[in-house]
Amino acid sequence: MSLAIISPGRDPQVWIEALTFHQPDINIQVYPNIDRPEEVEMALLWQHPPGYLSTFPNLKLISSLGAGVDHILSDSAVPESMPIVRIVDEKLTWSMTNYVIMGVLNFHRQITRYQADQKHKVWDMSNPEIPVKVGVMGVGALGGDVLDKLSYMGFSVFGFGFTEKDDFPHPYFSKNHLQDFLNEINVLVCLLPLTPDTENILNLSFFRKCKPGTYLINVARGKHLVEEDLIPALESGFLSGALLDVYRTEPLPGDHSFWEEGKIQITPHIASVTNPLAASPQIIENFRRLKANQPLLNLVNRQKGY
Ligand code: GLV
Image 1 (tube, rainbow, N blue to C red):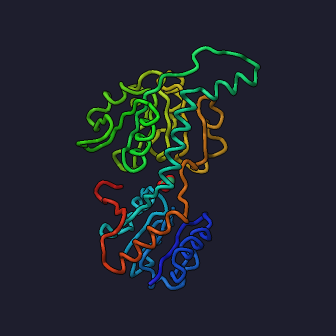
Image 2: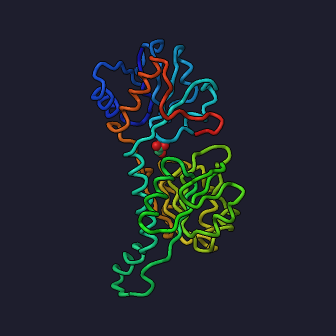
Image 3: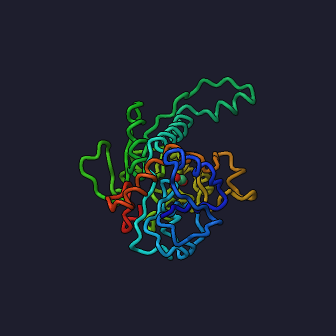
C-alpha cells in the first residue's frame, strides 16, 4: 500500500521529508516516477494532470495538499464516489489570518499613502485612520478565524455565506441578504471556496452594490474575480483599492494590467502556503484511518464542493 505525491512544478522533497519525519516507514511514490501504480491507495494532489488518476486501479482516497479542492473537483475523471480530504491546519489558518489582518491594517492605517508621502517628503497629518468595517465572504475554518481575530482587535466584523447559520458568533448574512451585508462594510475579504455558485462572483454588478470606496482583499481563488471588471470598478469609485493574492492565471502574466495599477497591491499566492511539517500528521492519520476503515478527517462534502 503506498501513497503518491502528484504536484507537478512543485518540489516534492519537502513533503517526502515531512511525511517520513512523522512516519519513517511510509511508502511514498512521487510523480512522474510512479512505477508501481497498482500499489497506490492514497494520492496527495496539487494541480495534478487532469485524467491522470485513472492510472491508479486501487486508489481509495485523495487528499489535497492545501485547503482548497477546486483543482481536484474540476477534473471530471475523479469518480463521484471517491472520498476527498483537504488540509485544515492551525498554521495554515494562522498565516491566512495574519495576511488578511495585514491587508485590513494597511488600509485602515494607510501605509501605502505614507510610503508615497515619504518619497515626496510630504508631512500630512490629516485623516490618519480610515474607519473600517470588515466583511468576510466564506466563514469556514479560515474565514471564521479572520472574523474572530479582527473582532478581538476591536473591528466590527460581518460574515457572509451561502448557507443559513444559527448561532454564528458574529453578525452573519446568507446569500439572499448580500446587499444588506455589503451595506454594512467597507472592507471586503473573499475567502469563499471556488464552486459553480461562487465562480465570477466578484464582478462589476457586484462591485456596484458595494459602498463607494470599498477595499477588496481576495485571498481565495483567481476565478472568483472577473479580472477585466476590477480596474473599471476602481475607476468608477465603487472600490478604492484591492489587495490580491490569487489570479486566474498564475504566475500573473508579465503583460497583465494589474502589475501597473497603483490601486492594486499584488502578492504571488503566498497568503497561506501549506507547511508540510505541520500538515503531514493529518495526512498520515487519514492514511491510517483509510487502512483501518475509520471516519476520515476534513472530508470534503462533494455536493457543496468544499
Ligand atoms: C492554497 O491556495 C490552498 O488552497 O491551500
